[in-house]
Image 1 (cartoon, rainbow, N blue to C red):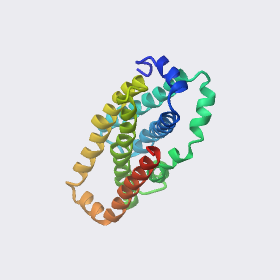
Image 2 (image 1 turned 120 degrees about the horizontal axis):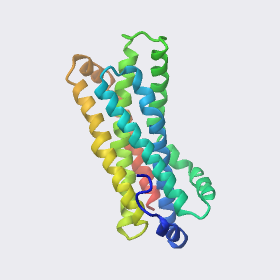
Image 3 (image 1 turned 180 degrees about the vertical axis):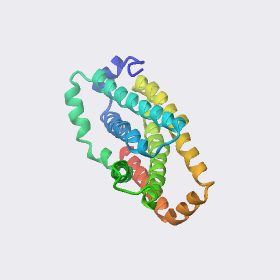
Image 4 (image 1 turned 30 degrees about the horizontal axis):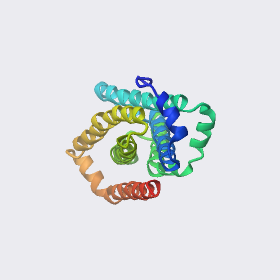
Length: 232
């Protein structure tokens, strides 16, 4: 549930904690909230035109439901942790660096969204290689988002909770982390494993290997730079 834990103690802590801890939490919540909201709006809308297996449709539907619940949970945290949530929301939205962290994944999601809808409208032929290439890179990017960027972000939250601050938020993020790693990351990994057992998947990977490496490198470098700045 989005309101499974009470956050009243966090309201007090946001008023009394040291400025460094305050900034770490605000910036981390800003990114987690934004990234989960993007995923909730995008995943099923992008993937649905390409899915013929009802089982896989069910998996993507479950992941989208998870992301919607996660976004709603972050919203509830903010509403419960501040006397004036509108002021807090304004402050969160002003953290432009947090939004920049998602630039690689957002770019690929945007490209995939366009291809998906063109395909659904019949503007792209079913056998056009751009379709498979786009979806392949989309799953790679989503895997990086869930398995690298979210994992990195959760680690920051857990550091703060381990120090005894914002423990209800830490407990909530533990449950969100479980969804991301046990369901979302595992799904992306399994899809790629299956596709890399097919001639088309192998040929696509070999052709796009440099692009895949660029995606992974960009995400890794972004996280290293972000955390070095955040934890300073």
